[in-house]
Image (cartoon, rainbow over all chains, first blue to last red; front, side):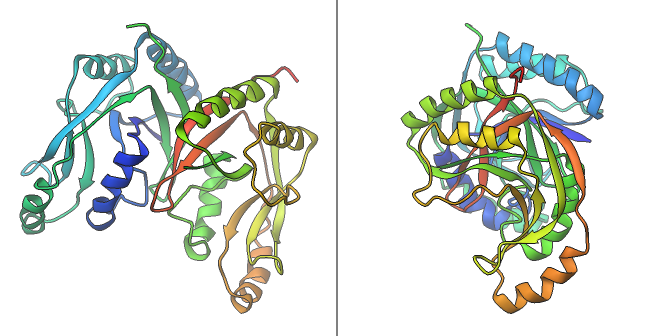
Length: 171
Length: 171
């Protein structure tokens, strides 16, 4: 089964992101707007119990972090995805590293570029057409995130929550 | 903001339900297959913190319950919704009552008929056409549910998880 760990921004940010995702993101109906903190990984039902325990430990060790978005950016030409750029604060990077230390990571290793996707799966010309428009929306938000969510994927591609973990660390 | 409390059945049951919801349930993309335990209610961001604390207490007092579905049924003629009928066990009814005792309930009071919706928003003739077909699928499942989820609704109608609560009571 496929799992992933995300943070959901506030309703305000999600509604704002959705106003664009609705048109530009084919994953719009599969999951609400989110920032991935630990990318998709495979685990079976026994493994996930142990993983969830480990995530609980990580969450107890980390305090809530500030999710600050500053602008709209793009992964092109690597991949034609447009997103709200999330500031890679020390707290967030540290949380990401601790979650990856659990194991069960993607085979491929990417640099961690925290983001909230609002458009994807476009061809190059669609991307080049839409990107300048989306750049202008100026996604400036700042909020506290005090929980993370372990999700799993259904056969139709949609994501269901497995468990929520409060970031309850002192620092 | 609108909130609700649900249980998600296993991936197997969700995939099975989705194979029908995809065609027959316009809420298909808004939420994954679920059983509502506390119906939609309104609360603001301060109220929900207190409510979440109360839900945590309820979850600590209740043990995991058996979710047993036996057949496909329909709410027609009250409403044209078709669902997997969930056996109203004592554990489940008790959990439902405890969650409603928190307050913030629907104005209208319905009897609690636990179910997993697979088709809705049809007109009467569509319903009467589809219902006999769906009745034949024979939804017989039995599994343990050890957690419940507090969700909130975005402006586009989709649901995001606010928090998960483990049913950790001894009995």
